[in-house]
Amino acid sequence: MNLDLDTTIIGIYFLFLIAIGWLFRTFTSTTSDYFRGGGNMLWWMVGATSFMTQFSAWTFTGAAGKAYDDGFAVAIIFIANAFGYLMNYLYFAPRFRQLRVITVIQAMRLRFGKVNEQVFTWSGMPNSIIAAGIWLNGLAIVASGVFGYDMETTIIITGLVVLFMSVTGGSWAVIASDYMQMVIIMAVTITCAIVAVHHSGGVTEIVDNFPVDFFVGDNINYLSIFALWGFFLFVKQFSITNNMLNSYRYLAAKDSANARKAGLLACVLMTIGPLIWFMPSWFMASEGVDLAALYPEAGAKSGDFAYMSFVSLYMPAGMLGLLIAAMFAATMSSMDSGLNRNAGIFVKNFYEVVLRPNASEKELVLASRLSSTVFGLAIIGFALFINSLKGLSLFDAMMYVGALIGLPMTIPALLGFFIRKTPDWAAWATLVVGAGVSYLVGFVMTAEFIESTFNLETALTGREWSDLKVAVGIMAHAVITGGFFISTRLFYRGLSPEREAEVTQFFVNRETPVVTDDDEHRSVDNRQRNILGYLIVVAGLAVVLMFLLPNPFWGRMVFVLCGGIILTIGLVLVSSVDKGKKEVLANSH
Image (cartoon, rainbow, N blue to C red; front, side):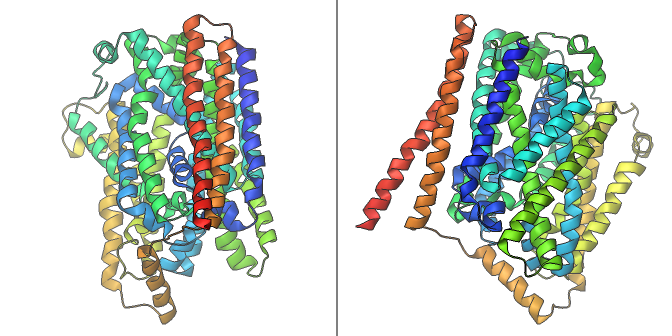
């Protein structure tokens, strides 16, 4: 393993990311700039950040391990994400932008009032910290496995790097880096997938030689449980990608049309992504590579190294460093978004509203940076805690967090977007009911209870129980928690005149398109294209130059292919700047 070479590549990549934050710092002067880019971002940047928020090192560890063990089954999660983004494109994305708010909790404040503003401010933060902690833990698994570093040290160091990036750069830097991560990760993974298919002799060879049923996987006695799991994953991902709390992805869009296009871009990327990302893991399993023997210290988590092993064994020297650098950056982007969002909610919905109503913009931006620091340290702490739970796989952890913790919060944020006549207390009361449902499913319901209740002749396997618990959790929230919110309509007795005006404003905003088409915005558009375009051109050239590394001819060509993809996208952005300038000139006459 070319450890020094890979470490050097990662170091250069980090410097490149710091440059993004530095170059975009001039875009940020207010809290609106810091938290949502002033609502001036083009669709390809917004679509990239929407896509990247569902993408982190976990995709290459926990999800790759699931692909290695059970084949195509893991792709269902990402296809369900694509379905959620399709609904963004068809309906939700432009309406989220039309809410005309800086933070998502401001939208909840308009819809459900002051009490719920504070309830959702404080109940949402733990969920974000948990998810980011899982991402950081997954990143540490990769870094420690490849470089042999201590897990705890890796979590602390990488967490502090993430923290530094999130504090120094606002949403402009975060979203710009998201776009670049998307370009580089897709280029690297497309290249890896092509090499995997080449070595296998074709996709059909991978499917035919897969050690278990490629489409269903192993340890399944009841196919109906697998089908139930798949169906309710679609329900969960639809709810998660189409509710007000996750509308922050589109608040940064320049206008309604750009928000809609962003949803389509995320949908397309998430549709084709799984077929590219998991090809190396499927190849490793079809070749019979024993990861448990290669990584004995990982125990039950050895599958998490499927992707890394492929790159180490089958890709040219230098590619592992490039991939891990991109994975570091992807996780940083996801955590940056989370930290930026949490800081925005804390500052705009608590600090400014409760503590300092007359605070200046300068004070609020400073408070934003300080609160980002606190949230970053909390994420590092939770990642260390997750690491201490040796028996819990990353895959199961992510699924449990989504189904049992995250889902209850999305229900009032989704249903309240459509159902108008509910009392304000419906939102926080639904959270209370959801917490009870989560407790029952998570701690009271056992495999033995299910087996005896339904008189199952064959005991549930570990995988079936894991899948069933996720499915039952989602189903229980859809029926009980969602049903409770809808039933509160029976108690609706009208609102105060002040609240009635706010709710009316919410629904008027939702249906009123945001349209921007002036020279001022074209200038900002061109700055985005110009800065990112040239940065990506430089990145593409750097990757192409890696063909100088001591590799066989095919290995050198791999870097030419990968860098060529990145370079092409950069050149397209740069050339679009000239087009924008011509439009401005034409409109000025």
